[in-house]
Image (cartoon, rainbow, N blue to C red; front, side, top):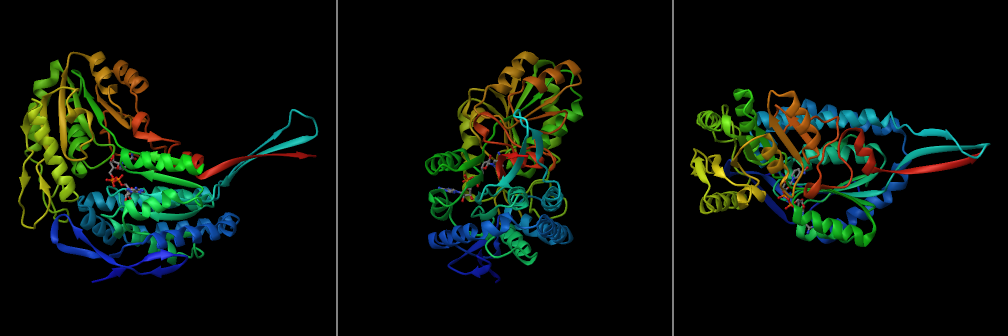
Length: 477
Ligand code: NAD
């Protein structure tokens, strides 16, 4: 059984190993992965701190070459890495290969950004003085990532961090060390100097907490749950460091009477249930106006009947398993809560048995839900959606915005007036018109508002906001 170690100061460092198991087949052990200790985390932070001065002044061509090489290797190994991703996380193989390609595209994008580090030059209001505005790296940065995008989320934090001259300690989620380790191995072999990138795998409550308590990190970029995000925020305020949080969602998808029915059904199916509903941008509230309600529900249920839930690696599987037993139990608990709250379980919701032992759940659709029910307010993070019937567009918009979250918001309509109004008035960081709430590009900003996010946006050129600090220099001519 291959044993994967942590990468600290350019060396592979061992420790107690834990098994990484496949949620599609719990007999399948993906690999053994070292559990970092608090001392490992402290050593990794020291290494990132020591490596920062030289890396922050490194040539842009060196950074460009390393990020390009990383992108090329990920792309050339997309089938193998996609298979690893599908095995450890449970999304289907095509979804996993797609995520892997996206990681390669992100490294490629930031390889290009290394060569476009522009500043500004202005005359001063005082004659004879020049003003130059530049961006500089912020220092050693801690990256904490969740389990649901095991290669893309680490990539969209690591690539800009290194591009702009920061050093990194990555703490991936316990459930998915495999993709993080593969990335660390690729970056290491691509020629990064010692300590510029460090990987410490292990428990969030142990080594993640050491990261939060460290006075030596200049920033923490976090994606995960609201509870952990709050801890990151409090600890970062305590240490006076920069922080960025991407957290939960309860994303609405509105379907108006004038919607194209097949677009509405396909977008809803994708938003609510693909990737087992385990996307922060997944929709879990379908808000449907009266005139199309019955036709839409009937068509969505017919479509759900054609969906195959099975082993993520099997050809023909549309939806893989839930990521682990704990998340499966959470999903089932919420299905019980929905029933007890009086919503109508119109489809699915039962645990399924397949050829291989895994955490399979039939997607659950509740109709006759209200926006006050817990299933409509709390993030389930599984293939569970509640459908809320409304009178008209105005009521739909008001319910869509009536949530503590604000990541993504979608609408199906053929009305330009309503589409335009929704784009302007949806309280979300991302708005989708006639498209699923999930599924975003890698070269444009990503993030939310209200309880979903805090701090500047990730991805595209907007990533520079977090991973750099601005300097204004005045020079007497
Ligand atoms: P989580 O908060 O449990 O874990 C996220 C990371 O934080 C993991 O690496 C974990 O080990 C670490 N962690 C846990 N306790 C810690 C502590 N005390 N100190 C430091 N680190 C700690 O979240 P999860 O279950 O892995 O991910 C699911 C959540 O992520 C969902 O709420 C989902 O909406 C959210 N998510 C958000 C986005 C987004 O961009 N908004 C993207 C993906 C996932």
